[in-house]
Length: 246
Image (cartoon, rainbow, N blue to C red):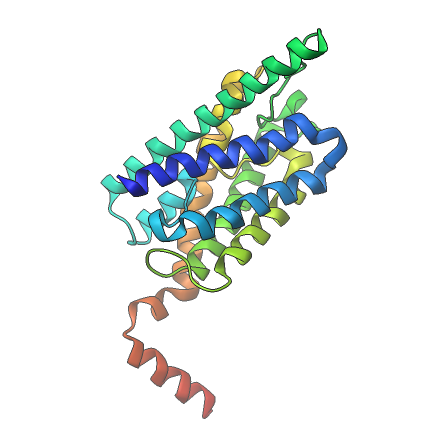
């Protein structure tokens, strides 16, 4: 239960603070500021709840853990439910804040996309649906490859959190002008519910594409590191010694 609560709270925090930066401070923060907000929030969460739940806060990451054999499917499904719930509540908190801003300024708060992801007219660069799908698959694959590559077992040790947060920052720098950067179905669904444009009709892509990207990441990860993860520690050390000796 503590792990599920951690995933709920962690996803809520990610959406409220990181997506909230785009909604409330996007004009002043810009693409770089928004990307850093996502990266910094994730780094903080990794070291806060990493030892409790592994700090997935993302159904695509959870799917990667399930497919790589690090988590049972039922547990992964429960994680995903809590992540989606956390994303929706985080977006709800943003909506409440937006209502306060509206009351204070005496005018309508322009939520528009409300930090939701999009393609076509909902994209800064008007990317096509096919392009958006491809971008989200590639960006999510990179994120999940990094997560699988730097983590081992429950929790996080050393500087792994920095690596994951840095990867998320770079991913957002590339993806924000294209799709707004999802790479996280839970991050996409919540804001889309409260958006005033047609973001909710497009959210399917930002659920399906990240999950597809996670599958790609698992395949790549197994090709690159599968042998080392499956081999006993002694065999890995022996192989390293043999390689060093030529």
